[in-house]
Figure 1 (spheres, rainbow, N blue to C red):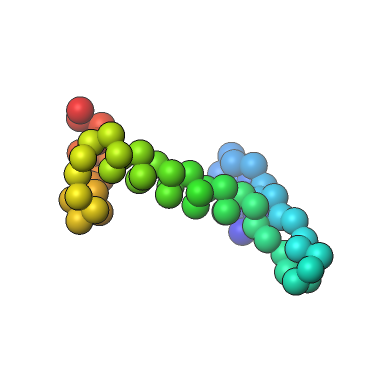
Figure 2 (cartoon, helix red, strand yellow):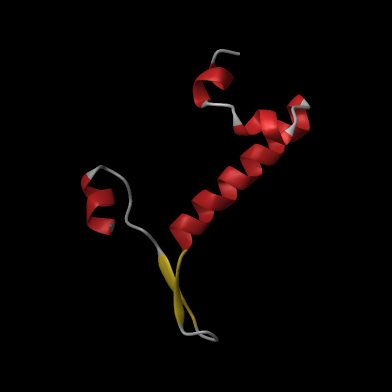
Amino acid sequence: MDERRVRLGGPANVRVRDLERGKHINVTHAEDAAFCEWAIVEVLRHSGVRIEEALELTHLSIRQY
């Protein structure tokens, strides 16, 4: 997956090891997910739309405004 990401011009994924659990954590993916969660909360907070309405939004519907 990292090779494809780099080939397409993006940076490689950053991974860290959780020493307590012995698992690898993809920090790049976690950061992307956290940004998306923050963005939807901000849309809900600033626009007053309901969750059902927000789920139907596309980038085109937001971009035209």
